[in-house]
Amino acid sequence: MNIRDYMYKLLSDLDQQGYILRYYEEYSTSHCCIEIDHGVNGFIRISDHKGKDHYPYRFNLILDLKESYKQDGNFYYSLNDYKKLLSDINKSRDEQLNKLGFSYYENMLQNKKNNKNKKGFLAKLRNYNDKF
Image 1: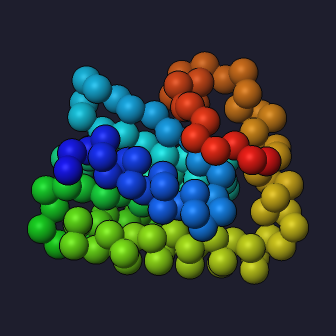
Image 2: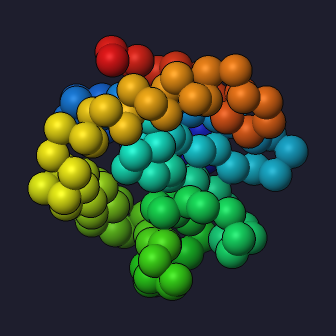
């Protein structure tokens, strides 16, 4: 499987769990990203290389990574830990829901509204299943 295949696998698996998803494919640097719940639960980056530390991807699936690790609040997963990635995304959403309550959904609506006419990276995101 290639980067794009894993992106669509993640989109399908997360869609089945009720997430609102938008995605972007970057062909020049061989990576894809997925926005989870309009950014309230972060972003997932899928790539064959680590990438730059200053980008805000909370979850990273790196195809050639040998061992998963956490660094500066971001998670880097090997393919062997795909199920752990899904589990950690669910855990993160549960923690956010417990912390924010209904504000989680209000934040989703606010992010959707604020990012609607943005330029740059957020403008490149395509809807996968915007149900909200």
